[in-house]
Length: 195
Image (tube, rainbow, N blue to C red; front, top):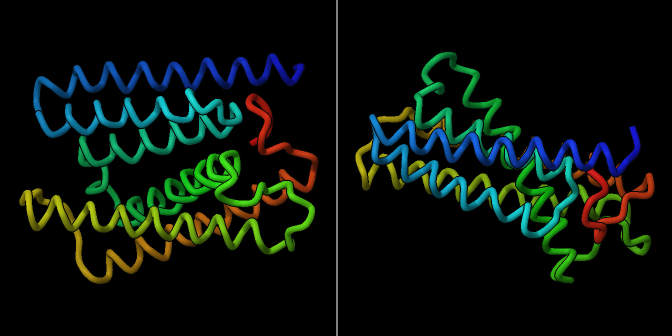
């Protein structure tokens, strides 16, 4: 498959996820105002990688991981299996961190991952730091919905530390993948190419 065809298929799939989120916001409206609000906010957030023209695969990964995390909260999938929460906290911050790294480098707030002047460790370290910030914001959000809005979810010291560790591990993994992509000739500034 030609790169542009592959990119087009990935972009269409990401757009399908966006439409699915919009439809699920309407469906959640029947049972939960909070769910509808979260899904509507998610839909708006998912427009960012599309408008920013992030690489198609990364656009799809951001859409899929954020949708998965939000659906897990809205429909209480976190209660199914104990380790499920850790997996979501591993995947989501890493994906968001990689997207943030590319966005910030595009606007020259960070060096581009394909900048040859960087040391090899710079991209994974920077992406891990971004992911740690995302994981911290996520934990602050969990605190807010439990302590301020009295939403019943499983939180506590051990859960918070495990979630932060998972988020940092996922972000390090995403940073290593981003560095590998850049080393193989990926162009962080290119709109439709790359991870």
